[in-house]
Amino acid sequence: MTHKSTITINVALDEARVPEQISWKATDSTADMEQQAKAMMVSFWDGADKSALRIDLWTKDMMVDEMADFYYQTFMTMADSFQRATNQPELSAELKTFAQGFIKKFKQEQLKQNQ
Image (tube, rainbow, N blue to C red):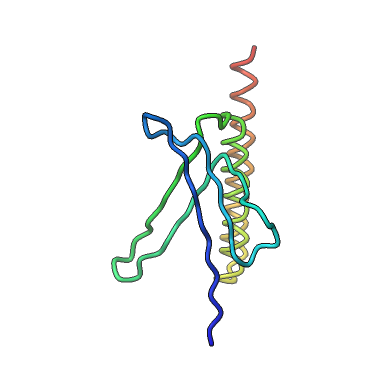
């Protein structure tokens, strides 16, 4: 018999349908309770259409600096995943270089705005 794992995502919306709370739980997780999140990105590859299907959500209390960190960390883990999936270290390194430049530029812009 094939093992099956389920991931459940719950999104609580305000009156304007803006996410107020995101929680998730996975059947194979060691966590007993739902985990809270301020943002999420989920991507699926549609092999028939050869296109990516995405769900990107964030709560209204997600701060701009948190969003930049979230993207930076996502870029870095995407680079690691790409390396494992394709065994192309040069392209993985390029993604990481981009991510490092991205977060550096973000922090520089934050410093300018706070002056």
